[in-house]
Picture 1: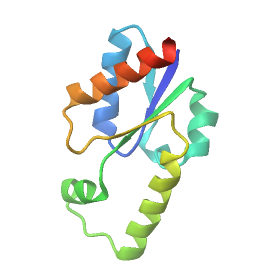
Picture 2: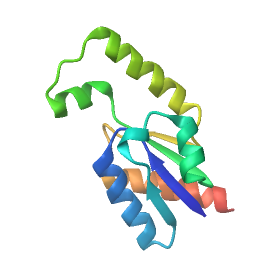
Picture 3: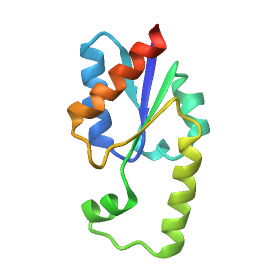
Length: 114
């Protein structure tokens, strides 16, 4: 089963892809520049399962120490809303540890494989 991890959290995607590969899954992360473009995910990655790992815009702003203008934030929110509709599993990661995120993914994959 080919799994692609997408979303705005680059480091989280790479760690999870590695953990899934260690468990025998064909898991890859989609590059950051394509993380907000759902159609590209399907064309570039051709996954069996598309997992979206979300980080709130507030957390992104805090981590990058930038103050985006309101119109830019609205554009990002629109893209994220669209992105959620194109994935097989959506996980909001702000309040979860990497282990909890991995557990949610593995639980989902068990259901898909059954």
